[in-house]
Image 1 (tube, rainbow, N blue to C red):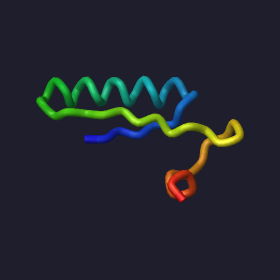
Image 2: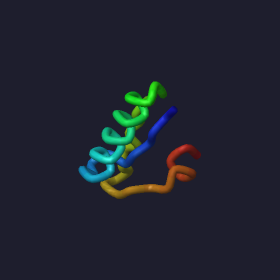
Image 3: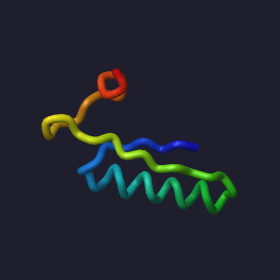
Length: 50
């Protein structure tokens, strides 16, 4: 499972790590992917990927 979170946002990273641990404990492999900010601001995933 891939978990995406916005970088530079402590609650998002913390939540992603907590979720990844819970998934790992349940036997589901999890990969964390940090979505970088562009020009210091969050962007929609659609915008980032295009």
